[in-house]
Length: 154
Figure 1 (cartoon, rainbow, N blue to C red):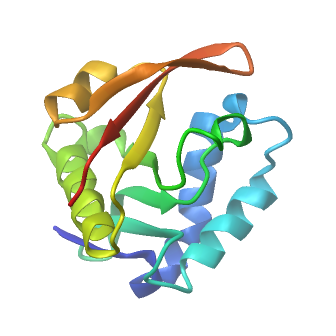
Figure 2: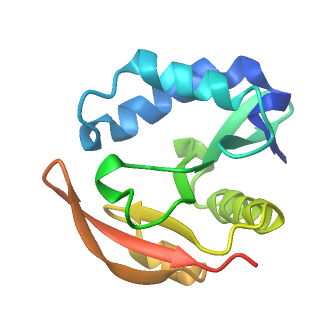
């Protein structure tokens, strides 16, 4: 298994878009599948923020995580660097792959000079806390309560 930039495997952008949109579209007003595709196709052109890391076993896509400047307009005052869209295919969950993706993104953010990295999660605050993320309150996105968390990558 290897973690690489989506830019190294751009053919997976549309698959990721489908996964991401299905998983999180309920949190974003007016976020269409086509917008999701455009965002990930853009990430597939770079190895700097905003970008996406992917986990591959050979050419098989197992998961992804993104580093973005803004993860939700309602939270833009909270921070300017966000871990977003951690996704692992169901058959690879529970194997430590999510932890590897998160660590790879935190390491990448540190190398990019990010002093403070944010995320929000509706359901997995305990998981991220075990990985060293600190609770920083709560917010609501389209009626869904989310936990805000941060980590200092450097």
